[in-house]
Length: 172
Image 1 (cartoon, rainbow, N blue to C red):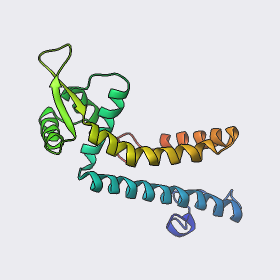
Image 2: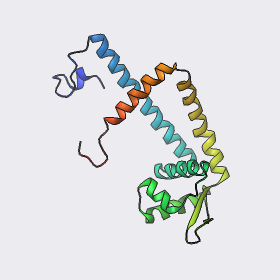
Image 3: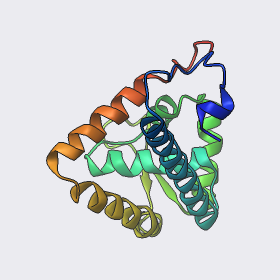
């Protein structure tokens, strides 16, 4: 339940006296729509992970590798570790899992013989494109269907919402 009349009836956290009943109902609908979106996003993400038989960190690594390769970057184990915020030992285990599942290849680095280059296999790239790519295309179509001024409102709202998130190391 996202209605502050229910979760915060004494207005200790959510000040709403300045809103009419209709405005408050609309704000609650916005929050409920965000909750619905987050649930759908979570379900889609979980379905992709199950389909590819991978964990969340593995999927994040693959997305990073695919995006980096698309931009012409050479992906290394250390760049993956930095992107994911995990240790090099954890990265080695992650790459072992991905290689065992035929999701990546370890190749000699083109410029640094002490390092490896990590590439996604064509099968995994095609699989990711088929699932995630189609979903992204549908999202793009929804955003493109908005009028320019509507997109600006959505952008401002989402950026303001993101700014409310506490820093990862800050207490709530």
